[in-house]
Amino acid sequence: MLLTRLHRVGCILLLFLVTGCTISEQKEIEIGRESHQQFERQFGGKYPDAQVQSYVNSVGVSLARYAGRPNLPWQFAVLNSKQVNAFAVPGGYIYVTQGLLFRLDSEAMLAGVLGHEVAHIAHRHSVKQMQRAQTAQGLSAVAGIVGGLFGYGWAGDVTGIVASLSLMKYSRDQEKQSDLSGLRYMAQAAYDPTGMVHTMAVLQQAGGGKGGPQFLSSHPNPDNRLEYLKETVRRKYAGAARSGKVGEDEFRRIVLSRHIAALSPLPVDAVAWCAHCRSTSQ
Image 1 (cartoon, rainbow, N blue to C red):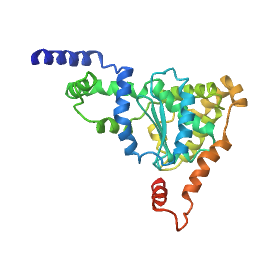
Image 2 (image 1 turned 30 degrees about the horizontal axis):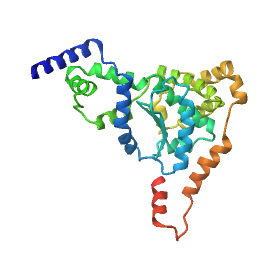
Image 3 (image 1 turned 90 degrees about the vertical axis):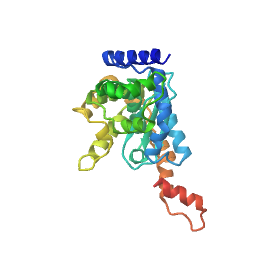
Image 4 (image 1 turned 135 degrees about the vertical axis):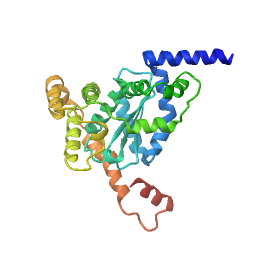
């Protein structure tokens, strides 16, 4: 019985090395389900404002319905990190940091960030990188990976997965594909797609000096990014740019005003837990 099982595993490993390991959609969902909470903890947990979280999730869900992956348990959240970044965890878990969120000026700019990350998931960019990495690591690392993928339990732990996701960098081609797909999702969801153009302009401007936004490190700039974004909007989405939702008032009322209030000094008689919440949100 044991020899039979070892033979079966050996065959799987050999097949993996010859053909590479294809991560199914169900396995992708399992990876996200097992790793996303630790990923959140690594970046300071969720930003402690339920109304902001609900708002960001609603914008994200409105975009994800056009991504062509209805089986994913899409979830969108704000991380309590001052990094200027956004992340797409396999399985449909998408995050924007408070450091990026509070640099934005409108709902359309937020939709630009989330639409871009939705596209990374839609095109399975992180999953494809994981598959390539598994193939490149060879037989010594394959045993543990394949054991997890085929139901024998992970040889490593979730920490390794989270570390890989945190350090993952997309290619310039993947970035461009996500930009263009994100524009399409925005137009389909009735947003002004120039929101993405404005967001990328803000990030590029902020990244002009040393120590720029982490977003530009994990999401490398394709050549002529602003030029092709503007040209695509002009050529394909001019109508959406004229009539699409910008949502400046909603964004200021639901996001920016609450952030400003959270940073304001509390009265001396404020209860202790409120002071704790305020300090952890900074």
